[in-house]
Length: 101
View 1 (cartoon, rainbow, N blue to C red):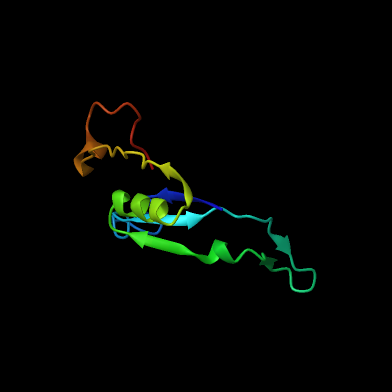
View 2: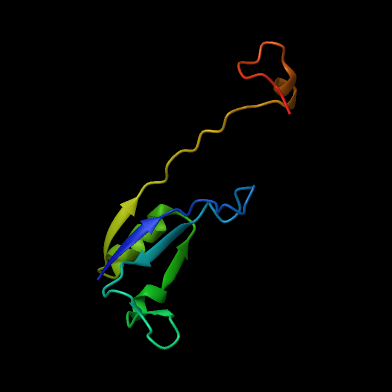
């Protein structure tokens, strides 16, 4: 029984940074998922795959795992870099790519 601790990234449907500040402890799958032959659903008999514990800080998540004897893998979040772009840059006279329709 091992778990991974990570800070979730924003989803593709988000423009802001909602639900990205916390940390999640999630158990690694212990058995492979199978496809139900009748309905085609993906199923698993692994009940721990349904558990997701949310924490405010990384230290709280690590302390919980160590207190309960859970082997864990800590995944550090990657820093995002966003380019500062102005709308007026679309109409600069010295653009590298010409503006056409």
